[in-house]
Amino acid sequence: IMTSLPGLIDNVLAAATVSPMAVSKDGYWADHWTYYMDLIETYLKIYPDQEEKFLYDEELPYYFSSRVVRPRAQKYVLSTSFNGKWYHVRQLNPSFEDSSRRKRMRHYVSNYSGWFRTEAHYHHNKRGTIVKSSPIAKLFLLATVKFATRDAYGMGIEYEGGKPGWNDAMNGLVGMLGSGMPETYELKVLLNYLRKAALKFGRPIVVPKELATLIRKIANALDELGDGEYMPQEQNKSTIN
Image 1 (cartoon, rainbow, N blue to C red):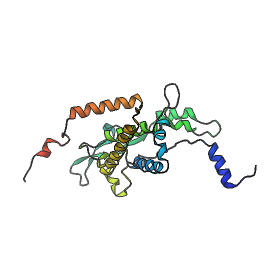
Image 2: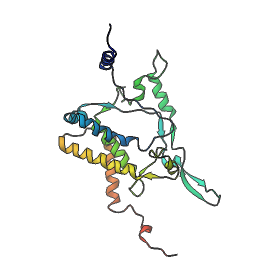
Image 3: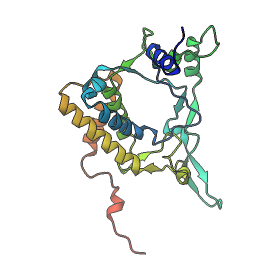
Image 4: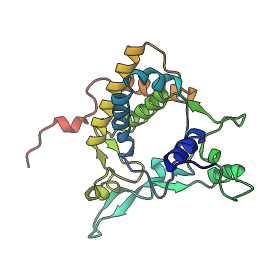
């Protein structure tokens, strides 16, 4: 069948299936998630009448990565200072390749190519079905996780994935248990949007039970913490040397 190049491209795209995909290497950049709101705002400027459908009526899978962030007990270490006179706490090798996850992914290897099929990179439930949620539920999950990974002062979001934001001058902050305020400001933008959308459409946000459990634990921790207790008591004392 003879057709023009634009016509061929249109026909191919009409028959194609979109498969969200991601790859990991040696860590997770702390700011990559912050571009979501830019994309959402751009989309809504073109399709403002599609906001509710986009947020609630579509479904997206959950990316399954073979790379995992280590618990603090495994990645926080005592390291000798440059002059060898004292120790300080550092964060080293914060993520690793989980062999059990890699093994799980091998269940979805193509017999034709010998490589992973698309579904190998998605989470499955116990029945083997790909787990999916609405975009607003996934955005709510993202906001919850970022809120939970703020630093000890409740300010910057921790660089617990091994990479800082897009600023090479901050690469050393990861090893120094650093955190970033720019990501916190982006979190506020995301939370404001989620609240605005929830009030605008008045529809419940259906989330996985694991997320509901995490939210309850965060709420209980905040109740136990109380107001204004992020600052250690020593911070309130004045010392003159």
